[in-house]
Length: 254
Image (cartoon, rainbow, N blue to C red):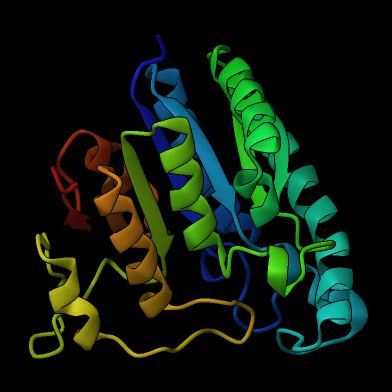
């Protein structure tokens, strides 16, 4: 029986530079160190990483996220290799092996294929020094086969594998109260906070806070504790796992 599983998701805004969409090496170093610290402490983790498309745009001379599917897929094909090369090198400094898992929505919607995913992830999680790194297979996914964004991919995988906790990392400390601009520490009624956010997103990303709340709603209804936290302060991740730290916590529905 595996111990509690924590799935950490980092968005494009956390992993790449807002100026040109290239990989933010310093941010990656800090995030990898934080996740490695959890693994070294005995926590079983999975990591859902965005950034493939965003990190591939510069190779095609673009200055924002492409809108047409073919160009987006081309960016993903370029950017995914760049991401995994960085992760392999950085996690290797902590004697942790990274394992790449690329998914489309069809993989989880088909019972036989979903069973293969379960088997693979379970086997990887049996090994204390292997970190499964998951991303949507953007180079082949089309509208009918995609998750919408990696927030939804993250929580669907969390439900599928029976994770205890999801931490969605973004560029702010959590869900902000619109009147005080302070972090809301805990939300027990997810439906009550949708009015606080707008459907905005960065030019190198697909989602925004609204999409995160859609994913949070899915997770808490599946019985998964969920947090929205600042990916630029990854040292807080261990505190969040310990029941402290700065984030907006969404307790699971029982």
